Image 1: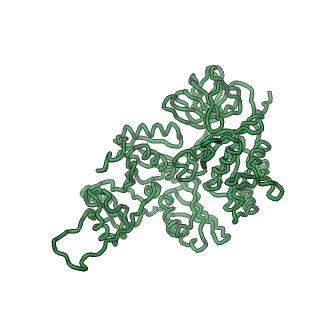
Image 2: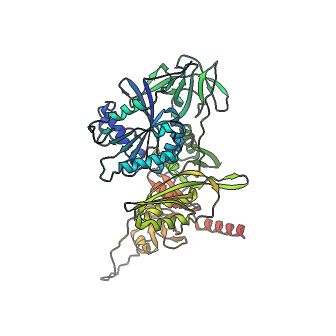
Image 3: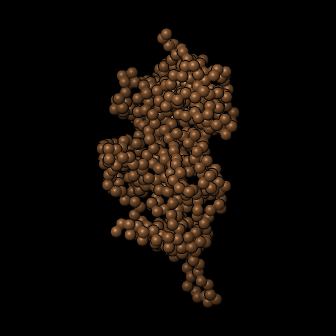
Length: 610
């Protein structure tokens, strides 16, 4: 029997680069359809509900909401744009039949847009292009539209995908139109009309139940929650079901509850029709790619493939002298349980215990892992983290490392500084395009070379550079890449840093601590102006006597401390250093806190080398 269409359902994912206006556009849809009312209607970035998402202005977690328009339920899937969260993107796109590609009318398509769009086109999804921020003075919608078409061709889009509809919008002002000249700019509803007109309805396939799990959530009461789309048949809470694992193992299971997505929340349901999205509670051992089927007809859907992790870091218990001063969760058991809970939600993340109190955590990039560390800090955990390391593969006896595409958009005057810095890190330019006083350069560079590069490029271009990157492939290992050139300024003992000592030491480099801030032996309190480490006494105070002379004293002046973000801190440290993350502070420290231990380690390394 030929499958029919579920005309009352549309499933669409939203793709957008960072700062291209996705939250305002979605907010306008939710408000104009009265999905967000009351207090919610006064808030911005309704889908970016996580604190970190609001602070950083990026989508970290994929989310599902639904709106009802002209009798049709439209399931909207919010996708993370950053390549570090690609583990969610490639799964949630499996639930959609089309994508809404949101592009800034001035900036044009960017690397993160390309990353997600490539995944969508390969899945055969129908695209709708929305040129957002059309009200900007620098908008160039005709040129951007040509760039988008070229990108589609480059990514191998089909003829049907190349025949995409185009809308022009200003999400912040809440309007969108198909024709800039003829239509009135009054409503965002033309976007929804385009979804109904151009996005195909899901096939209402008759037959036994098939639902593939594409996203995981976790509840302390019901355990893992499997989220996916019913591909065939009807999901019924009262009927027995079986879980077919990716290795084709069949496990009978009992569904405790089913929830569909309604508005900004979820609604409990007894049945879910074919083509709709839902969350299934209470199935033990459910994982990404598993198929929910009837017990008597266990037919699995094709497995979902995921890109492998490229970066790993070591998470350790905090064994610094300030241990336990502000955190509640301090032991290796606490860290192990927290990492296990995270892997229940995020299958792109994995960890293994590599020693007493140490865990090797692997993910897609520094941002991916730093978000986890930041969440743990805010939950009351204390831990120390090592410098990020790339995951090397052995292919046919040759060591291969991950290579990424790096795009740098900067002013024409600073291109030389960018090329010089990227070249030092084994980067090779593949394309350069100059227009309107700015130059866009594309490089291929080892992932090793990206660690710490963003900060250097921002500094070298006086803040003008816009840096983006995405994973490309694995290549044979390139030459060694230098680490940080400057040495560290290390505290000699424990105590509060004094203004007198910091004032006297300022010609030695820049400092990470303020006067009155407590420091311990082995803590890195600053960056030395030379290429070697130096041990100093930042606690030293002025020796006072009863003798005074006019003009013998001078006013102390201490420059403000340099404060690095968590990502900058992880990229800054060398291999023999750690970042101490606690709820109230980020500190740098040497792996070995005492000078005696560090000397013993240097002597051992020298003996091994000779």
